Length: 415
Image (cartoon, rainbow, N blue to C red; front, side, top):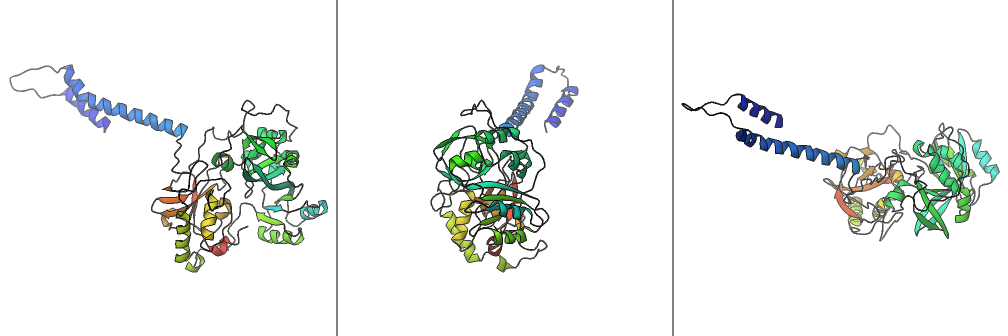
């Protein structure tokens, strides 16, 4: 439009009809009167484009959604030595990253696992690698945080590539710092480089690093785990890429101490892969959907609290689990597991009660990090982050992973 207007102005300059019997030279004021509106439009367009570029570079903190608030450069989620609370102690040596192992099962027992049992699991058919760790919930500034004590030199190979490759991250863990998940740090309000109190000890938040293992939200070294009171050697990470995870899980439960739990990591749909036709009976009934939505909307305005499962405070997946429970549907606890609670459908086919999922975690872009309940139209109901409340908000599509229609039968089998 601007180019066309300028072209027309140039044609006027080249030819302007003379009035009969009168000669009048073209004057500069007429030119400026014709061009000023177009110059103004052009300037406004340029300024608007610059503002859009700045907005894209620096982001916006729009609390009406749960879009990620990346205050640091993408990939820079390790606190530097110059930030507050940095330890001056030298870090114990950490071995360089060697071969990566894809984790498939996470074992947790209520007691230390005997070395003979660990050796037996290592020899099991299809098992490629096993890592012994410590695992329990630790309280950090009043938050109950599922925490793992690890050997940084060996455990790093079981984490996502971005996390595994950060020497600074694992050096910090070896030095006594804690690496927390991006979700706990960003949504839970734990500032990178700050300190939290756990078990009477001060811990520095040294990194945001999602390990991609179910609900594990913090990683410390095994010596630090001793200080926090975590049990020693009660957990395993198992890599078994050539064996059916479900079958291996059942086999492990037969030999593990009573009360042990075995969770699949990055769970997949437990129904046949080729199933494309789902009967209506596989999903929530109209009565269940209404009960779930009524329960969820009844919590509007309740505060977000990372790790909270209701009835007065919630995080994103805690709200989903609680609302579905009111309809008699058993849902797994974390968003990454809820992602496997039914078939994926296009957003255009979403119906009230379906679940929307996002991959907002820059430390592990494949990880499901946020969930919301589809309300209808362009609205969703969700618990966004610390400092916000349960709310209805407009759906945003940045980093949207997909939409899942919950099947109660499938959801009850996800581990």
